[in-house]
Every structure is written in C-alpha cells, then in structure tokens.
Image (cartoon, rainbow, N blue to C red):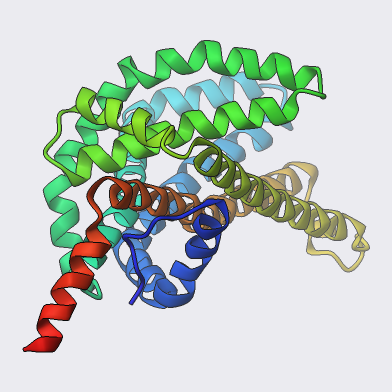
Length: 316
C-alpha cells in the first residue's frame, strides 16, 4: 500500500510520485478511463462533428467563387444546431475538466483510509464534491486569475530575455503549486475558500524549494512529452505528403476534397493529442497531492499516530 503521510524532501517527492504510479497505476488509470473516458469520447465525437462541418464548408467553399455566401448561408440555416452543439460541448469540457482535476484528489483521499478505491467509491465521492469543485473554479476567476495576469506578463518578459527563463519557470511552478494546494485543502477539508487559499500559501513555503522545484520538474517532463507528440504528428504528416500521388488516394480527389481530408486528419490528431494529454496530465496532479500530504504530515504527524495504533494492535 502506498504511504501518503510522509515527510519528503525534493528527491522523495519526485520518487514517490513515480512510486505511486508503480504501486497504484493500474487501478488508478483503469478507473480514470472508466469514469472520464466516456465523457472524453462524447466530447471528441461532438468536436469531430463540429470540426468536420467547419472544415468541409471552409475548404469546399474555398474552392468556389461564392465561398463566403455558401459558408454564411450554411451557418445561418443551421444556427440553432451549431449553437446547441457549442453549448453542449462547453458544458462537457467543464465537466471533464472538473472530474479530471477532482479524480486524483478523491483517489488519494480514499487511499488515505487504506482502501483500494473501486469505481463505485470514486464516482460516489466525486459526486459529493462536484458542487464544491465548481465553486472553486468560479471563485478562482476572481482571485487566482487576476493575480496571474501581472505574474505571467513578467514571466513573458523574462522568457524574451532567455537568460531569465529558469526564473520564469520557477515563478509559474510556484504559482500553480499554490493553486493546487489550495484546491486540495478546500476539497479535502471543511475550510472556507479563503482559509484554504491561506493554507495553500503556507504549505507552499513550508519547503519552498522542494515544492517549487519538483513541480517545475514535472512541468518540464510534461512539456517534453507534448513536444514529442507534436513531433510525431509532424513526422506522420510529412510522410503522408511524400506518398506518390499516383498511389495516394488523395491523388484521385480534387483540391477541395484533399483539403477537407487533411483538415479532418488534423482534427483527429488534435483529439488524440488532447485525450492523451488529459491522461498524462494526471502526473502533475498526483505530484501536487504528494506535496499536500507531505505538508499534512509535517503539521499533524499522522504517520506517528498510525505507527502507535499498529503497535497497540500487535499487542492485542
């Protein structure tokens, strides 16, 4: 069983994040796909339908002289459908995002009680905190988002200077770590939002360099992974373009059909990228949970009390 409550330095935070997936990875990912996979699939289908219609009208219309009128007429005739699909897609994106961020928190909370969480337990627990997670998102719009504007503006200037890029990464990592710790505290306790915000700030500075540094490391790992996915997509696209037109099905299409086909390929590639990114993004979310429970251990000495209870049970 993975040990949540444990005092950790920089190395321990990184090792235990990977250790969590080594110990719990199979059960964690399986339940994540069961709970969030269906919503992601529906979202992908809706995005595919909207994107397919958009690309077909954009590219097929671009081949004709009356392309602007054709596209405008199509969207006018199907305005209600497009708005409806757009609203539904927006709601699904919000729901998928909330579940995606809440899932690791709930999994770790159930693991705190020495349980191997199953799908039913996870769904029940997520339902209970869903409203609070939505409230956290709304309140963050008036707290963290305004604070982020000057911070990211300063970071952008640092990136331009190149030499200060590490400082910009450190600022971004520290800021997002504060948000995640606030999120964990708010949804794991009965504290109010601003109390959790203060607790998150205090936890960040309990071991600042370890917390900021490990967060930055995992962001770099995720960035490299995303770049590899994009590079792989670029290679596939380049190889497709090198195929001889005489043997390529695209050679039998006119220019508008070919453009539409490539547009759909780009869309499908984007959907796969987003789906994988959601799953791999759990790495940083679990990492923040490890930091949160490390801070809790420093405050409450949970592991010490647990060891005392185990001694008592052994005597019996």
